[in-house]
Image 1: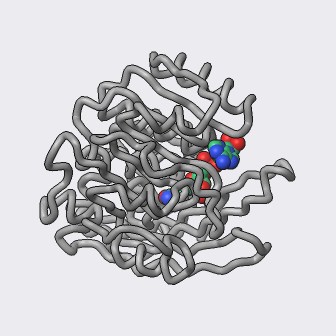
Image 2: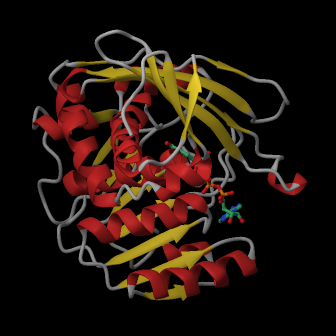
Length: 327
Ligand SMILES: NC(=O)c1ccc[n+]([C@@H]2O[C@H](COP(=O)([O-])OP(=O)(O)OC[C@H]3O[C@@H](n4cnc5c(N)ncnc54)[C@H](O)[C@@H]3O)[C@@H](O)[C@H]2O)c1
């Protein structure tokens, strides 16, 4: 199927998932993007947001362009924490993918699958720089969409043998453990307390709900020497003293991190050691000793989405997936 003048390709949630882009392809494309970002060949203004619905809900506009991938576009994404109780998805939204040379819209695609996969991939790329290469035990707190995507992405880059899974919801935890052990041939242990998914683990992922008033369950002394943690739900899970134990505290983008702090998150954290562009280009060192505790708080970049959108667009055209719409 060829792109047609004055038409764009619409890809539904099912279309995007059915295109068959792999986690390995996503990680590879995002690694190229983070190197380009570190060398200044990307553009991404900090994301503006609006806050209908109250509480911790938001809609963010996330534009970005990546010269090396000839990718340009925007994600318009909502996160409404009260939705699951209404039987509605927590995260929803659309990506518009534009032609790099002409700016014309090439595609509109659902963003849920992309958001899930690219967030796990970003943590895995952080881990490639910050975790011990032989990391084999993964702890996941929050057995939802991100828990799943992080298990898949970490399995792609590390010789994982065992996973400790914790969730407040007992059913979610049991279902997750059965699904992940079957899918990735891993021993998955559903654990009773959050501490069991932190202490003893080489890599820890916290992926519960984020909130401006953190529950801050994880205490200093829980994260092992030599471990790496990815704070997918911002600082919701971590006491300030536990974050201050990090020898290297990183993020995905310094400017966005600053903007997020001004919005009230991360009031008490260590200095930022590096962002992912600096790590990917080697401008800042990643892990230097086996005993360091390392952490990243990746906020989720428009660049991530724009590193994945061209993969989906190209494969969808090759496979004849999607619906052409008149501009
Ligand atoms: N940083 C990023 O780039 C990025 C991108 C997408 C999502 N997120 C964040 O990741 C988090 C998870 O998102 P998701 O889409 O997987 O949500 P989800 O609703 O699919 O899963 C969340 C899970 O956490 C569980 N949970 C609730 N409170 C908990 C607690 N205190 N301890 C352990 N588990 C708990 C829920 O039962 C649920 O199973 C959210 O905070 C979301 O905002 C971050």
